[in-house]
Length: 180
Image (cartoon, rainbow, N blue to C red):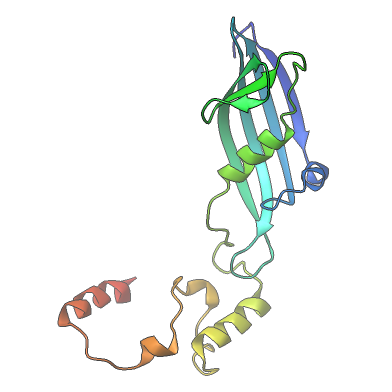
């Protein structure tokens, strides 16, 4: 970090997420290091965010722990009224001269979360995945030998199970799926 930069550290916990009341993240523990450097025309903000968040698993709905490690840059300029110039430039009224970065930090965290939130294989709630597997398969006999965590992300519908004439080229592609 630059010697001219002013550094601020924040420790975010569940209380931060409760106060923000954002939809993506409700719980977590993160450290934010914010470096503010004043230039002749603006303020350069460097955010370093590292820690963990807890979000519902897409498969069993129990909380899954996801690591977060992201760096973001933002430029804050003084102007006449609130506004923005592109994705990373914010304008703050000169007479106010301050900016609350809490929501910006929350958005940086939410953007760093992967699209898919699932437990590691074998870690999902067995009761929920067992019921889900039963409903996806349609037959209680089939899910006795199979674990929900080993299933692919595809859902087989009744329409797909019916035998219909298929192009023989698809059989070669199906062999690839069978090997995985």
